[in-house]
Amino acid sequence: MILPKFEFHEPRSVAEACDLMARHRGKARPLAGGTDLLVNMKKKVLSPGHLVSLGRIPELSRLERSNGTLWVGAGVTVSDIAASEAVAKAAGALGQGARGLGTPLIRNLATIGGNIGSARPAADLPPSLLVYGAEIVLVGTSGERRLPIAAFFKGPGLTAAREDEIITAIVLEVPQGYSGGGYLNLGVRKAQDCNIVNVASFLELDEKAERIRTARIALGSVGPTPLRSLKAEKRLVGEKPGERLFEQAAEAATRDCTPILDFRGSAEYRRTMVGVLTRRTLAMALAEARSRT
Amino acid sequence: MKQLIRLTINDRAHEVAVDPNTTLVDLLRYHLGLTGTKKGCDLGDCGACTVLMDGKAVNSCLVLAVQANGRTVQTIEGLETAAGLHPLQQAFIEKGAIQCGFCSSGMILSAKELLDGTPHPQEPEIRRAISGNLCRCTGYQKIIEAIKDVAR
Image (spheres, each protein chain N blue to C red):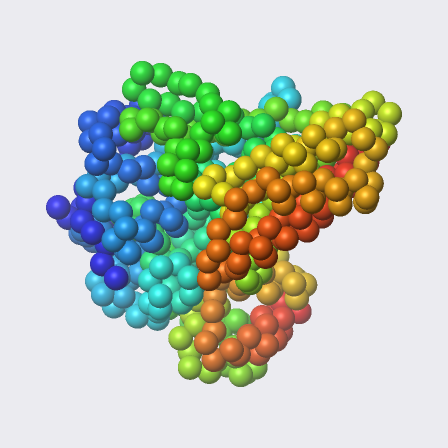
């Protein structure tokens, strides 16, 4: 398979990368791990005239927790996120998402910035980032701005990033108190497949660890962008957690999605699985929250 | 326009001029004649083109040759030493883990990354480590036995 021709740029700084993106406005694509972009170029779905490789900008590879904030540079690979103890402690569901993505070979190349920037509805990392309330740091020629991840996705392959902007980092406030998260993805196989449904849940209990104070649930692969299930969240807040309640929230989640029918599964199957994964990820989130008491 | 890149392949320094749209697998196979790295799907699905880049197993069909500039690449040809075949290569032969052979290079390199970091993995870790490498002879069981044998 032949890759369409392009000009290759390898900036050494974010500023240089933004200048290149601006200079070749509309014709340039940032190249991160390449596991999505190069495939689409080989299939001739995309043929950008310029590729701006982000692989030699050291500051994009920073992964650290400080002052209650987890900072994940856009160039951090999915395998590094999967193996990171800082991620496992601060945002367990993000680590679970990373371990569920693709294959070891893909994880060694793919980056968190690419997984978000490609805006695939079935991507593994966005649901967890949604439930942790992550922010996307975007830098362009006119400076830096931060967007809540929910405002970043506009549709399949579409984002709020301007043509001269690149994602430099994903930032989240580390959840405090009796809180926990969970992520599960369902595919046809355990590796190397596109998700049929993927769900992340987050729960925070009150100071007595009795009732649910905050609940966030995000559903992937069942809409044009990953979706929050506000119906399910509403069902949970203020209640005492338990199997029965989680069943009811799961049922509510099935009414909050717009799955499509394709060769991977029917819309009805997807809807049913949204319920199953919601119930199971809530149980994971509760187990982690209780482990902190 | 061709770009000059320098990279280390199997402990040997190479300097090559490549077009930006040349992938690492094509550089290895067609420019340097290292045909031990196989090209299967060319889309990152099958793992036949697996090589180690800076010690990490990657699909070389999803890496541009220019991205490998300055890096260290190890292919199946680089595993044998004066002392003989790599223990993984030997075990694959002895345990009957090679059938048609097309997936073997990739399987062995994925297994090598695992064993370099985790010398004594459990079976689930072995299965996860080769989950990006497809064997269309479906000889997975023998492959897992061969890796286990080296990991013992």
